Image (cartoon, rainbow, N blue to C red; front, side, top):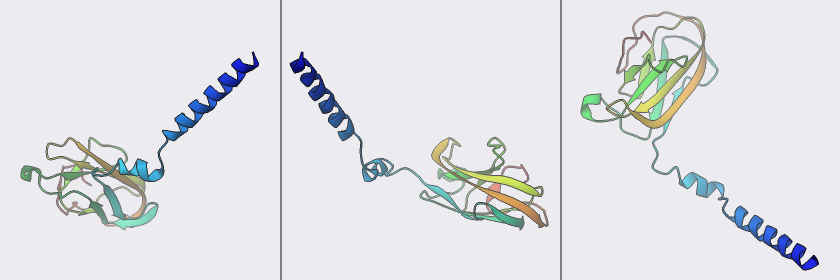
Length: 145
């Protein structure tokens, strides 16, 4: 019986060691993200108090341009309304029309056919004032952002 318990203990220890050896380090996990597109919002900063117009600046690891060029582009949307987006083909976009108060500005990288390219970002802003008008800066979509 004692031999049987020792054998079970040794087997359990071996399984634990083998199980832990399958866990990769951070550098191994991040290398799995190599080649995936990136998208980040540079301005405004998250949580910022802003006035209209809001200049949205972002960077992406992919070249973007008009959909008819075959290049990727960015969808800009507000408050989680991903179906109400504006197509943006440059890395700067001016939002001229938003009600006062807190809003979440989101961006997603899209292929020319509007399918997701796999990168997104968002910032929370508090609109405190300013003048509104039409949005400009390489975008179209008709949602008034």
